[in-house]
Amino acid sequence: MGNGLFSSIRISASGMRGQRTRMDVVARNLANAETTKTADGTPYRRQRAIFEQVLGDRMNGSSMSLSTDTRLARTNPGHISETVQIGQEVGGGIESVVQVSPDSSDFRVVYDPGHPDADEAGYVLMPNVNPISEMVDMITASRAYEANVSAVQTAKDMFNDALKI
Image (cartoon, rainbow, N blue to C red):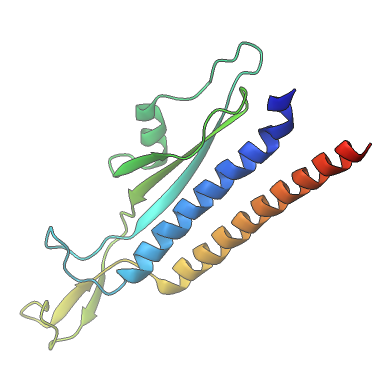
């Protein structure tokens, strides 16, 4: 019975960890929005957080999760840089996986002949980070995090009310 009582809190905690990872990715993107040269000599490439939730089979307790290769090929083939496991299987319920992958869109080209990384024609390759869309992602992640906090608080209130009976 204890597993059933706290599974809603575990599921919300998994969602909160995922949204925290998403906010970290957005913060990293915003911090590097003007980085024109990384260690490999190219501009910073925007990162994306890709969520996947895998439902488990409650009847026999086995997980119906996909293999990593299938999951990665389905989300963004050839561009996955890391996989972060943020949740655990909750009593055969849910497992959350957040994958951080580089965005394959083209770099921005800006004319700035005085820039140290400009080519002979005066053009500079800039990161493919759009601060406006990053802020929208940050607000969305923040709201989703708040919704999960609210769900945890509601579960705690229900537990307290049940104990008063």
